[in-house]
Image (cartoon, rainbow, N blue to C red; front, top):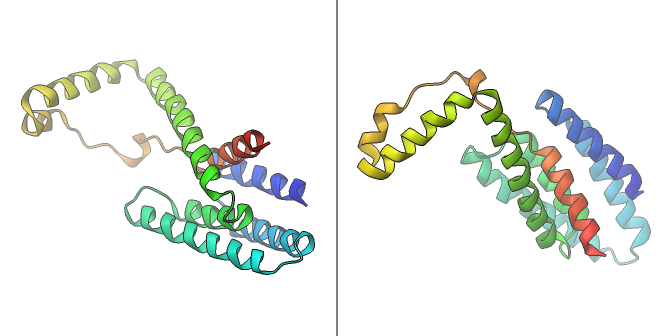
Length: 172
């Protein structure tokens, strides 16, 4: 059953990386597969309740990050489903490894941005040098408006899948 969940997670990660969208039917598939897995392999149904509670907690915490414009709506739903799947006993380690993988992938996206426009690196160094010397008022002169197409967006589902894989790898 876990292989099916991993397969669907892989499809979710590829979909988010290609289209910046996470289809709801894939998240629902993961939710159903993990619920069936928990019902089949656990005779105690209180385990299912605690997994549900962990999923809701992850969803609410991610929803707060969505309101702060840090996450997209699909990422919020994905983290709720992941919280349900891993349950309360593994959620702390999972969040840790998702954080580690987000730093690594974020650094790689930063290097990609630097490789795409090396002249922009000098502008950023000048901006932060002025910010350090003169405070926020001196750095505002270098700020320019960017179109949304010029912003780099990092898909979060591949980061979540990498973090989950790292967690399960280092768990044993």
